[in-house]
Length: 193
Ligand code: AMP
Image 1 (cartoon, rainbow, N blue to C red):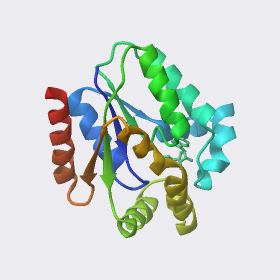
Image 2: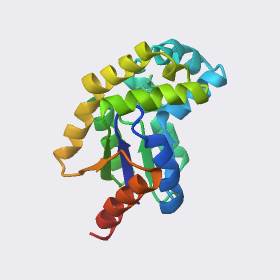
Image 3: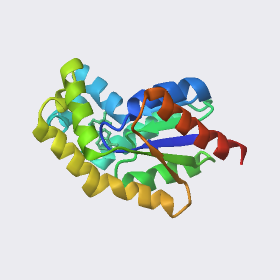
Image 4: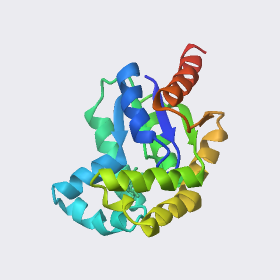
């Protein structure tokens, strides 16, 4: 089993690259943002509980996302590996994930961290706000709140995995295919190593 975390700030291209990587490597894509949005669309109690936080660009409580991840791991026992996109977003989530994977006899193989300038992130998110139905991409204020949550709480996740020598940085500006090639190179090196 090969488990990958695609890491980076909002707008760094995690969703786009995840789709291509899961196809190429046969991984199960696990995006906590997508899972939460489908809870909101289904108007479930969980969806109602997180809706306002998400609209404000704030992280939802760790317990909620950890529980969601736990059940997806349980429901997919026979996959080649998972690609985590938008998770873990706090050190507490990273520690919980590591424990869950140990219980399943596996671990994180690689953390690929996409690096994109703040100016480019804001440009991409506003552009996505114009073309998608994501409410959290529309206002500059909410985008700023998401970037601030990333800096305050999420950036530390890379430090957590650096301790284990699992992080590789990839330049996340360029064409989708150029960035995809860089990511694949890192994965291929790690998988044959
Ligand atoms: P994303 O689609 O990954 O950009 O996530 C959209 C929003 O969902 C975030 O701004 C958070 O409000 C929430 N969210 C997604 N994943 C997580 C997570 N792992 N921990 C906390 N909140 C999350």
